[in-house]
Image 1 (cartoon, one colour):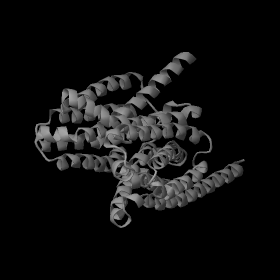
Image 2 (spheres, helix red, strand yellow):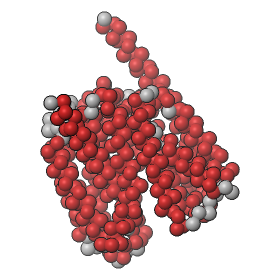
Image 3 (tube, one colour):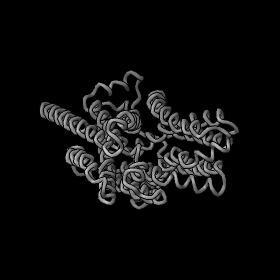
Image 4 (cartoon, helix red, strand yellow):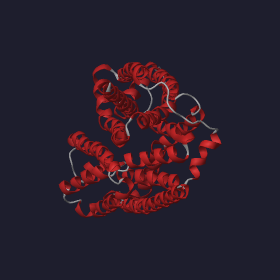
Length: 404
């Protein structure tokens, strides 16, 4: 019986990881086939590029709204329904005959992608034994990170050999396969406490949640204050050949995947309390980056180093949101599970906008200074978050002592 349970857990965990991987590929593959879609639909590349922006905006806006509206319904049934919507939207992308049709299909796909991802986190929290919870949450995050690294080249390869429509067809086939696995193996009934929308929104009054959200925003801003311009940094600034850009970006992506794995370990060994040192390292690495622009190898190693630590927050903050919701706001668990994904998108916008704003006065060689500022802000927010957690824990301890 124990072996059967263990096997069932492994299958469930694998499903969760592959779903987030598939969702990530669906989002990022478009970047690699922009020119092919542009030629196929006979529109400007800038218009096709807007699909990426529109996807991110709809993803961020729709996820909390749909989570709030569907919270009363069974997680299993909700997930399967959303997977059907995702399949329809993605398949329509493959069938698009003009830009308007493609735009609507991508909006439909984006509207449910974030909710499906947050449900994956909710299921991870439900099915994993306590000692494995951090590892599984980290693995689910890693699925998306891996997709961000290899999704673009996968899309490019498929498109160059079989046409851009085939990239969406492949995703649709994978969606059907994962739908069947979800229907067979994920728990059909789970403990859930539902409430009104206002009941669920009360979690946003919690200081631990507010500081956690701000930490996600500024942490994403750190990364995208330089990652937005990673290609010109590697080629124009550091002088690497454009022919080498794929493997250079691939190594950076690999560091981010490893970072997600390490985040799971960190979540089990101190979590948020151990993170301040890494934000200090972020600030130091980004501060010294302009000093070594004449040595492209040194600066590239610095990029690898910061890529290794910049996403260490992922698993600890996801578990923090889930734990707070579980202990104090059980009606908001699914809503809370979506916070990292929603506010990471906000942070991406903040970081890239700040980098663009300061590009002219600072220049490409000094753009990392923007990341230094965000690192210091995030460090302050993290300290305030840890203090809020300590106060909450002390309050709970006093409550328990009074009870005895």
